[in-house]
Length: 351
Image (cartoon, rainbow, N blue to C red):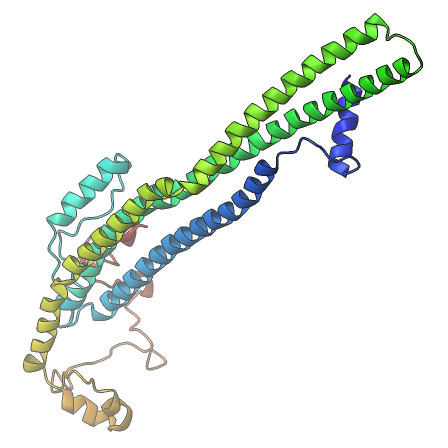
């Protein structure tokens, strides 16, 4: 019996014997599901790429703020460029919070933080967008991956079971046909069919009937399920689309609210041209390139001639001997260095 079924499976897979019981509806739905699965995979790749792009953009935007902070440290530009003040909310490095509780704590801290410099605004923006990026991963990316996993695993498993039932059906169908042919040959010779052969034929006909009923019922349910997940798959897309629309609306609003403070920064920067000589919107790169060295210094008019370099450095770029390069710190206010604060960059901008 077992050997006969193995032969049936081999003939089916090698194409030597084509099954008469293969469901045309199931075969058509399998092809449709392959196309549906490709679309679902494309969606997963798209939201994953979008998430990665948002993370990369957030990091690059914060890197710009880092550079501004570093270059403006200990200059008149620092208050509206790099200063974040003592109240900037750091990332939770205690390890005591996670998930929604940690997000709520961070959100509360951010709500009480009112940045007044370019770097501080981007620090706050980075912290807020990171919360939303984590939510995007949880409710959009992970949902799409789970959606594909559920459908692919379940349908693949049931198709294998359907094939197994069909092979059993083919086996009994072939066996009954063989037994009937033997009985017909016997009767064509004018002989009666032995009772044991009649019983054997009757038993296998019953098994064939049961096998066909099991296969037809299973395939009918499977086809119904596959039609449901494809024709009404929009019901499974719906919750994901709700999250996507909420994400886009909320994130854009948060970014707009954060960046409103940039108007104040812009006004402060414009006011600097009234308090400092040769500070203008167009910059002074042309002067730096073409004017004489002394003219550039004189045009600035601020502490000209008051700078002295001590030490015995061997070149224009050497530091005084009394200064250890490893102890130099930038970013007064504590955003990207240790100057004025014990917090490190990891405390503020961990991603």
